[in-house]
Image 1 (cartoon, rainbow, N blue to C red):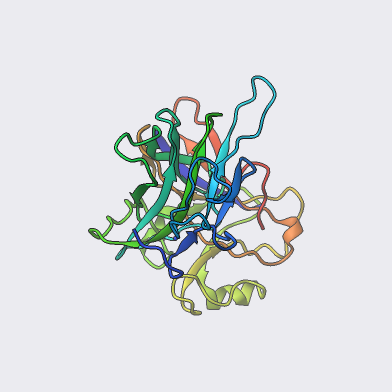
Image 2 (cartoon, rainbow, N blue to C red):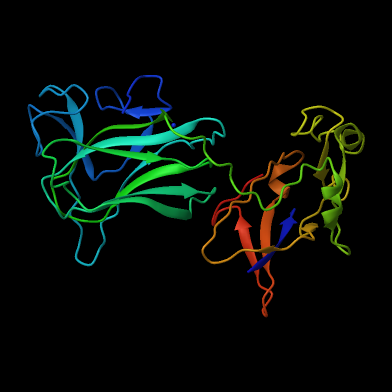
Length: 308
């Protein structure tokens, strides 16, 4: 489908150097673990009498304990990285974990999520259950893409037992990751600025100017740009402090359209700086679907969220 964008103003090696790590011998600060999981050790085993980290009965691990739900309610157990994994273009990043189950049919998946609303999800591994050739902890290793992501381990079965240990995100061996495919980019420092324009006949008019010039018009505007972090860099802003009023809007449009197929997914990334009266200003990003209906769709912020 064709899109035109409008802007409406109105982290097998475990160490403490890992990007993210939970070995369950100390407090797990890197992963959010929901209430469907418990913590135990080999002295009080839940299916296995030793952990993976220490390989002793004194070591700790996570075990699956799905909460009972009323009929027709689905179990949605998950473990997710708390923070975003930032992309690396010169080093490979992997997700490692160990699991144990004696059940051949106990499926769970490992997914990657993207976007502020975390709605863009794709499955990178589906584990059906026990590996028939292994009667101990089983290793999972997933090479991560060079993208800003979170990792989610998800399952919706009531089958037990299942145990996890040593979850980590860390640098690993392998070929350098491919850079992300970029459909379009503009830092407002080149001729790409010609592709942006402020829609006419609206009270607020967008402008692209040097930071040094912008603060002469709006004294609360950022004194430097994001690209170069100096006063000579350019950015887009709405110089509206003198005409701000409830209901006033201004549209900043991109002339370029994109043909995105149903088997592709992309993220829109941008930096913004809020100044002035935050209670009176709202920023929204829309996609204009160039089909027969020419639908306008809200891309950002996430539903029921508001930034500025």
